[in-house]
Image 1 (tube, rainbow, N blue to C red):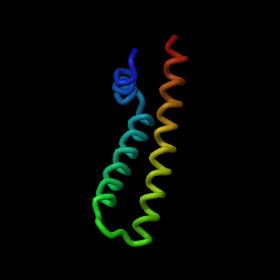
Image 2: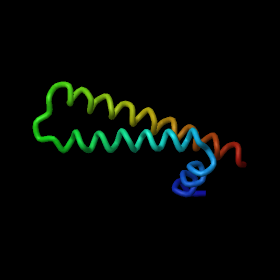
Image 3: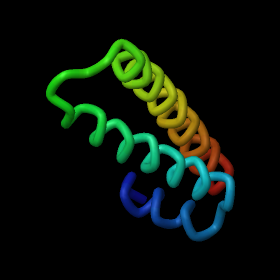
Amino acid sequence: MGEKELKKTLMQENQEFKAVVELHQKYDDELEKLESITYLSESEKLRIRELKKKKLALKDKMYVMMTEYRKSSK
């Protein structure tokens, strides 16, 4: 099973995985809005760094969940 198919399966079968993906997307959307601003305040710059860290942590969590699913389905 490829990565795309695995994500789709987990989105349907695992509510925690779905919540993590949705939160990752929410952070991504907020990040896009902030990055489109020409002149950022210090608090906006800080928020961008914070969002990037949170997104990375969520992405790591998704890959751990995907790896665990692969192991358990063998």
